[in-house]
Image (tube, rainbow, N blue to C red; front, side, top):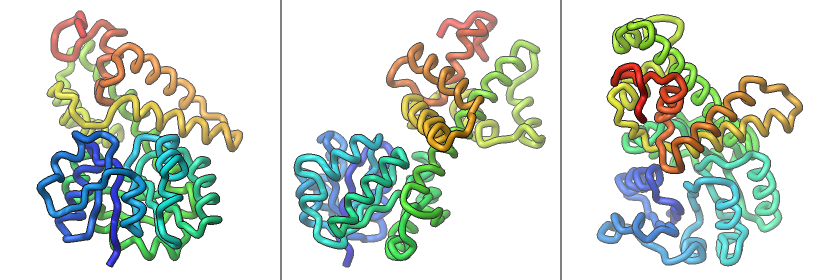
Length: 302
């Protein structure tokens, strides 16, 4: 029986672990934040005290971590997984890491007879809870076949994309498109408001027309027009993905003119709104520039 370790049980990882437990898998969790582990203390699950303990007790380890540097530290750093995992174990990085770094880590692990798979997800907390995530897998095809049954507990659209780094590349490009539509829709919403057009009516019509996107059909009616801004995905992390896509374009010598502007827009929004803002709060950045709050008259006071 596979012994699964899960490192990183934050907003997404917490619910992904719950899905594995619901299917009665043998899971041990670890997080550097003790508060993140508290919900699991009274559940039928192992709670490790270190990364090393995960490696010593598991043969498949799932990582749900913020960026490549933290992934690298967890795998290759002092007390990292490379020192404690048994040969032929598999590490699955389901966060949003930089593809070039992913390929480098995979090469190092291959020399140690360890396997590394990138399998980032799309769908957010809502689909992590329901087990309907989209999972984009970069791996040797045989490794993909081995872990696919586990991934199916977490998502309903599991796709093998290609070799190491392919999944992370596709995820960053997907999020670049998402960020583009989020900001384009922000401009559309503010312009509609200035033209005295009712926003919910406008969205209904847009969603039956060629301007429809995931932003117009889900994010704006769910998080932005109600002004809850609680998608549980930060603007800081989305900015990281936009920069990643832009860096990939630079690596392959492809001009990305919109990408350059988008990086500047989200960087400015990040500076203005601070570290903790949800990515859906990009609308507040434009409201301040345009002096137009969508629901509170002509002057934006946010």
